[in-house]
Image (cartoon, rainbow, N blue to C red; front, side, top):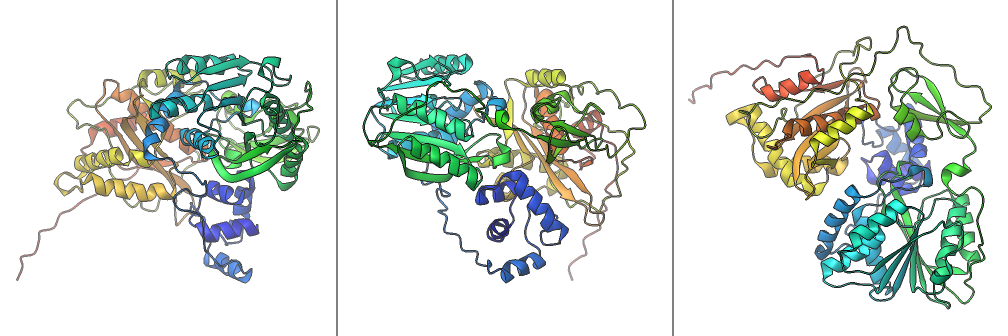
Length: 591
């Protein structure tokens, strides 16, 4: 709690993930502590959160009122900065990730970001492990082998003699072979189950190794042991080790495994690795530079037993369906072994979701009584929304108006049947196919110029001659909001990275009733042959973001003359709720 209070004082306003990254505590722990603080009126109900005056008083009483932050603002504590010359490598690796194999969460996979891949290569260079030499990758679902090859291609020559990837996945290895063939770096792939010692031909032949193992002490020992088997004998050979944040007791086990192998820590950077997913750990992990010594040796033979986080889990967790309040068990011995499986199947009571995590329980404990009974059969899932027609005479985007203050809303009527339901997996896949080659992702700072153009066009459509249509001003405004939180900001882009669509949904709270609701702030799509499908995909993702955050009411504003966007709203089941009246008064003559 002290760590969370200190981080809130220093970082406010801060999201749950920001606090998780700053403290090293799992996101569910931070969220639970935040809820306790809100119940005591020590933390604001608005998000991102900040301490209330009462909370600030508590921090002062505890002697934690100092907000000095010495973290480097250039590298953000990661010790490495990606030079401009490698921005192309970041972009290319992002494209390769989108077309590469998906992460398998059941075996602790969670792909690191393109920036992290490049930073790992820079760490190899900074440590003197590259250029030159032979690199061994023990597992490579993060495609670091391709990062090494792409960086070499961008710089004009290979930066390593040989890269060897050892992985159990034929899909990952096939993708690495396919892509690396045209990059000029020698990449060898070996399909192998790391529960068994490395093939003899890989022993004692490498100058440096890198691994990102399963996030268990057993996983760390096994993968580091295989790295040691592949390194040349003798001291001062490098092993670069990525791992997720754990409790002090769990980390003590991991450090004991490192010591038992005769390895010594030469460097350690918290929050060096950023991952897509891995939300429970705040999406980050540490990066450790280990060195061999004269005592380094692997004593690991064949490995049997639990290896992955899911294998070691002995208790179930209760999840509550946000839509109907049904309590469901997930974990060993339950109908669903993972929450991903539950999401894919949907709530057995109402067919929907999302699901709010609850307490850990033993498998033999009686289930929690359902909080709500269902008086009528749940409606069948609605078919996929019809394509959104966009008037050919309309300007380029099909937008809604720029943000405006939202008046206090009436108490939502929870008895109303939802006007939109999440599409089935089949309908969702068909929609994504219709929207191709365009893809979607969370917006970032690099999208701001394009977003500024979209917002300016939205203003012109909505307000005509009265519009503020300077793209730079709109980009600056969105950029300030992006600094606080990028959640709910979605862009569509071509495979080459060009931004061609923009959707912005924010979560607000009614100051009079306390109810949370979503504000559909912007939707715009550039002129494309499949423009309506891209708009539909963006709006669908925006509504899915609302569901994932437990939101059941969405509001949006649209200018009366914006026929394309009014059509979009109708197609997705929005009902007219308010009408904004406008009156112009004559200007008084100057006297």
